[in-house]
Image (tube, rainbow, N blue to C red; front, top):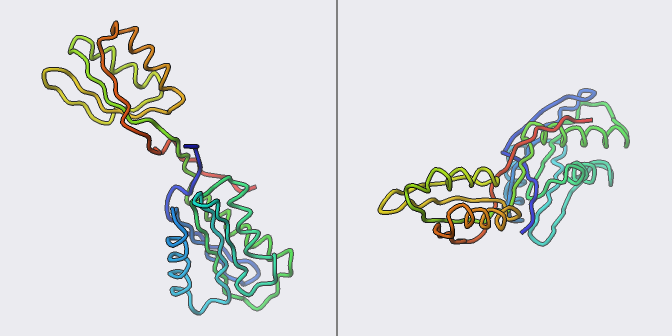
Length: 214
């Protein structure tokens, strides 16, 4: 499992360029079916638009797709896709809708407008860093609880739940790169008495960044 970046949430943004109205829509997705359904929903919503340009990137099959939707080739879909590529964002779909305002933008103007629309929308959504983490649980005695619980965040982990019975059971997740060092220190600090078990792996959100368009 490898870390990745995706849109933090579904969002939209809007701007006007020489009387043409541009509306950007973005959504985190995990499959091509979800991406295509989102694109179709925007096309249905804006059935009267001049163009509904889209692009999406997926981890699944390393898929990248785009459409100029009637704009001159290379002036709309590819610049939109390039915004996702440069931000290293995947599992994300973007649609930039245009209502023509009567003034031609030219090839360069179209590239800049669609790039701006995609960037502005991605900036509005934010970029979420997703890290692969190991899911674990451990048992310890009550007198060891304070020390054991503090070791988890010290190694970048997060406690998800704690149950108190005859012993303390802690459920947590932690970046895989920190797991072995955590286990070694846990064994040392409890003289091997605390029992830890790895339950599997899952992606967890690490942080949200709001990009500033250049």
